[in-house]
Amino acid sequence: RLLIIDFGSQVTQLIARRLRELNVYCEIHPFQNVTDAFLTDFAPRAVILSGGPDSVTRDGSPRAPDAVFTLGVPVLGICYGQQTMMQQLGGMVVGGEGTKEFGRAFVTESAPLDLLEGWFLTDREQVWMSHGDHVSQIAPGFTVYATSPNAPFAVIADQARHFYGVQFHPEVHHTPNGAKLYENFVRIAGFTGDWTMDAYREQAIAAIRAQVGDKRVICALSGGVDSSVTAILLHEAIGEQLTCVFVDHGLLRQGEAEQVVTMFRDHYNLNLIHADEKDLFLGRLEGVSDPETKRKIIGGLFIDVFQKYANDIEGAEFLAQGTLYPDVIESVSFSGGPSVTIKSHHNVGGLPEKMGLKLVEPLRELFKDEVRVLGAELGLPPSFIGRHPFPGPGLAIRCPGEITREKLEILRRADAVFIDQIRRHGLYDDIWQAFVAILPVRTVGVMGDGRTYDFACALRAVTSVDGMTADYYPFTHEFLGETATRIINEVQGINRVTYDITSKPPGTIEWE
Ligand code: XMP
Image (cartoon, rainbow, N blue to C red):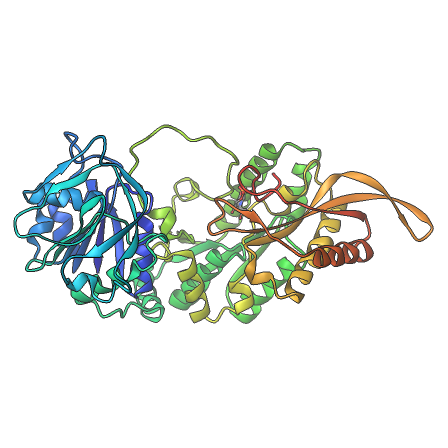
């Protein structure tokens, strides 16, 4: 496996992504944690030193452990990683004014290097630079292999020791051919690219069995991709020792509860408790219209309900969670300071301690798209794996103002028509998330010869990579017109349809 030592770059995770795409298993660890003992234990076959925001010219700035350079394995330093490698191996780095370089640059080859094999498609390659300091003198044993107008040491290497340093970021999109450098690096390090999802599945099942033994495990199953894959993987590993609790808070989409129960209980034969607590949740939400209060009520009740059912499961010692790799990576924070809470997210954090349970997190090494691949390996249907994200508080945050059963029913029906339209037009997979929000206003309309006074709704559909930023989806007017007509004709209680064209920021994806 490959070790990525993180110096706090914003894009360190992308390095891991590029390597995973090459079927190479890697882990990111913050530089503070990489001690000599850690290195011996981890026994990496290669090491990558990430970029970072600090300056190696500052006293006390982060360093790679010296042992990295005596392991006898290939090392690739990126940006800050290159600079600290030079500093530590006897070169020199200068900082300050006049040397900053941010954005697109072009490098040209000065001598052939195994790392650059096949990289130069023309006489120059576009790269993305982002650095304040630069190497001014390379360490003994190193040679320059590529330069850019502002970076005389764009690519350097000590071929004998297989130490490489690049000034730019090969992992980002703006270094279009950057994946080639990673491909060469892992080949040089002797990786064969055999880390496949099938291998992962076997490995994860063995690890679950070793961790759990003959004890019982409980799992909160929402029907979302992460919790579903977690449950099925555990079921495959420990069968009857697993019990899943599906909390039905009455805020699910049309037919959703039935689908979850049918699939997991009937198809997968899982021990599934369907906790039908609609009345409890909807009762407690009565008269509540403040978004944060809604979220807190739902989050709190969810924990109570889950705990109530879990307490009845005798001898449970473990709680399974679908935590993913991006949630796990300990980020290297230099800024500190609390960030503003935009929305309090719904999760079951704190539950394991409260209940005295140990955690099983079989997805904690995977990225979201890898979870989907694993789900497919485990036989989950493609329509299920490719589902849009659905928030924990469910339809509550798509129903601004007071939540009533009447509004929820109207919302469910309108949402089902909208999603059906999107599927019929083959747009589902191009869209990150799509849904209807029912607005807390009634408007006047005319249908046939009669006056109507019904709810207005808003359609929301966005494209996004990670949900952090989003753009509204550019439907055609024909699509929007057809959808509005269908909703008004097919859903009693709605007589006006609007399309939300706010991007994020400044809007958020959900309405609350
Ligand atoms: P916002 O509305 O903040 O949503 O732009 C970004 C993404 O997060 C989802 N979301 C949630 N997911 N629990 C969740 O599991 C929550 O409380 C929650 N709130 C928002 C939202 O659907 C979108 O995909």
